[in-house]
Length: 361
Image (tube, rainbow, N blue to C red):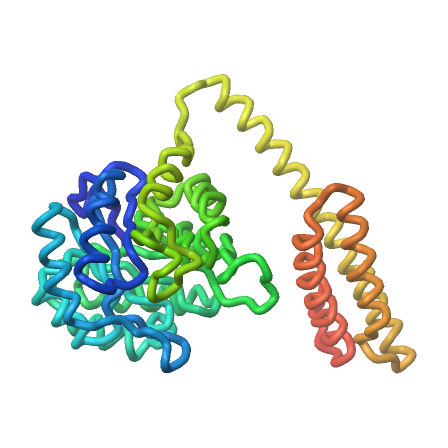
């Protein structure tokens, strides 16, 4: 599964840029926004026609009446247009209106029945379609949605990383959890992967840093929300930017060289990577020692009929490791997450000991 943009027959330069309003609101709003985006060099426009919202009563898009407006701006400005579809009826109306690109939203990706219905309605149709990651951090669901489209015979399939719900994240609307799109790209190297900083950030002041991070991780493009008057947008106002602001941001983004030919650079980079490999082996050796000590503690608890989990000890570990991290100029949030995983594995190991299920060495 997965063909590159070049194999799609697209000639757009890297990185691919898709931009436009969260929602198509009026003919005038759409025309003015598209006209301004075209001046910034944007050739593919996005716009919400049907907007599935978390709660009823919110603006859910103007619906199919926007499709003739989209046809008009496509003809007037020579742009391609991308919209979200959430059911076979949306697909039919989009195809009838000559929409160029479709995407499946995060709320739809989470439901295999919905994805299968959309995939079935697209059998025999050659149209580019992107799949946003599901709301929850479940890589299997994301891959499953892509596979359903692949099995339906679609050849131009891509993925959109828009972040994941996380109640613990106070910075982003949806946590990037970069390791998940990286793992997706590792499994399917040719699969086009673009980043949606608008839905990750939820606020415009964070957009540049997230977009730059995506490009630094070799994403194939960006899909960004842009509106003629963001503050008065009918949906997701805080995360949209004016076309001129978007153009400035795109100009400032740095496109990194992926395969530099400088032999001295390659030599020095491989030398550093070799040192990283050595340190990683040392880390694993230290982690092995720690788990051996955890096992000893588990045996001692078992002999003395003591419970595995002791909250006071865990609070002390959680607090002290974060303080140590700050003193060593490490990201304390990263260390907290690391020790959550270590603690979870430690509990599992001691549980095996308590239940006499420890594997033989």
